[in-house]
Picture (cartoon, rainbow, N blue to C red):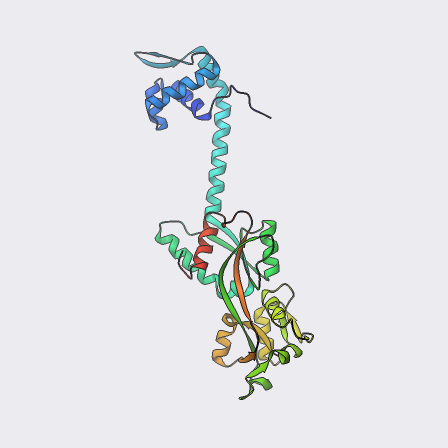
Length: 309
């Protein structure tokens, strides 16, 4: 449907309705927060569209002509619908400001995102803003990309050698994978803390499931070697850590994820020669070159700035 050329603007209809209710063009202008000059200009525009005078002025104030009364009657439903539209858009904007759905790969969800969210919340409070309510889904990087692609979440954080194809992204940091074994593993003994990349590739490892950013980085790093079948394939970092500590075999995990285990001796780090295990951490979203305006953009800025929005 295409609107005709004689449909006045909503602000002009609002002005006419106020004149009918208040009996004064000046009072109507004051209520709408515009000057009387602007009100007169708005009135002239709508009268030109209708083709007849709509308001008559006298010493006692302003009143509507017969045509003006008809226009106000017809406009009542239009203004009511406009108020509903305005209220709906206001509620939508408030919901987007007040709630943010995020998905993050497991390492980021467990070891980085909580700190980012706490810092962002404090930053919002200092600025006098209501803190954003965040719903977080923790899953592997492949699933995070799928959730963002489908629109189920507004923002995702993934780890891996590359950002997902088809999504906008921003690098928010890097993380190193470290090779770890249990204390009873032969590689944990003194003098055996360094192995070759070819040896690691030929050893059955405890790995994350396909689609995990951790696994993608490891497989790409070992791509030039013949790789043994995994000893175990597990769907969480915590499960991999427990299996390695129990003696199931070596694993490559994020340095953040194993920091406490290394400090307590539950796991032992093994140096690997000739292996690049740096992984990139990206924020991802759909649409334009920048994250969605509001909490999503603020969270990305906070993460990329190392705790400064």
